[in-house]
Image 1 (spheres, rainbow, N blue to C red):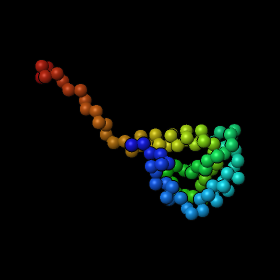
Image 2: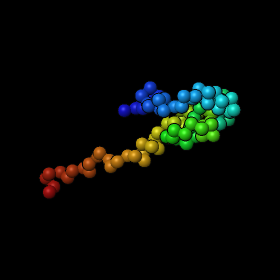
Image 3: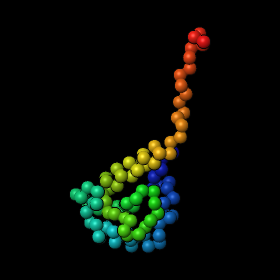
Image 4: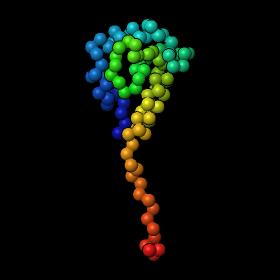
Length: 97
């Protein structure tokens, strides 16, 4: 199942003054902190998978960089939490036993 902002519980865990913090971060960092080129339009948690909403733990970034960073973090999380594979080793032909 894919997880995105619409299915995530992250929004409910944001502090009440999130919009104020968001605005402050975007004012402090008007240029993307990842690429250094485009305008910051998204506030990103510097450390992935955390609920630290302090200004120091946030950074302004552009939408393309945020999408790429989030995808990389999600892939790393999936790889780290992957259990044993579902594939079985190939079975020997019954006539070869």
